Length: 113
Image (cartoon, one colour):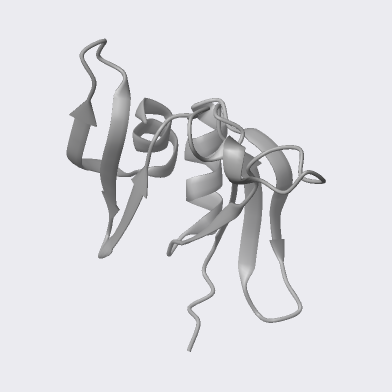
């Protein structure tokens, strides 16, 4: 969560921790958007995966105004770059990076209509 605040510019909205201080659930704001997240959980999520899937997968697309400035912020905070900023064929500027929990983030200025 600290990485997302530092690298991607989120702000904490609501955070619930367990008795050990680990995050059970967090809500983070980015502009008008909100994401909910938690740490890795062995209990219920992994047990529901099909046999052929090696782990929980997914990615997020975060819309920002200045992709290059956001990329600089994220890399300074330690984001592992998967794709440097580039202009796409659909008119967006985007980059992709991994966070420390292994989540792939796509960041760009594409606003779906």
